[in-house]
Image 1: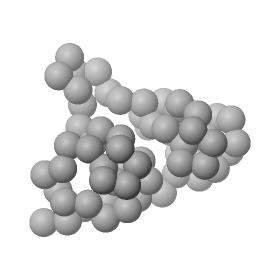
Image 2: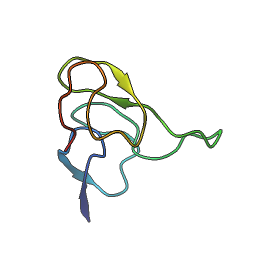
Image 3: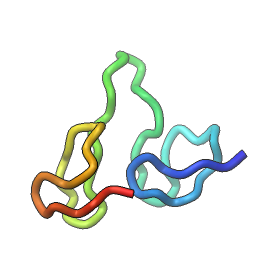
Amino acid sequence: MKTNCIFCGEEIDFEDIYCAYCGQPQKDNIEGETSSRICPVCGAENAPDSNHCIVCCSIFI
C-alpha cells in the first residue's frame, strides 16, 4: 500500500518508517514525541503540525 510522506509529499510505502526522499521519520519516535517538520526548501525546523515554514513561508504539501 502507498501513502505520501508527511513532510515532502513524495509517494512512499505505508510501512516505511523514514521517507526515502527526504529522510524524515513518518511516525512518532519511541519516546512518544512527535518529530519536527523540516522545510524541504530552506531546511528550517518547524512544528509537526505546521502548514507553512516559519522561516521562508513555503507551503507544506
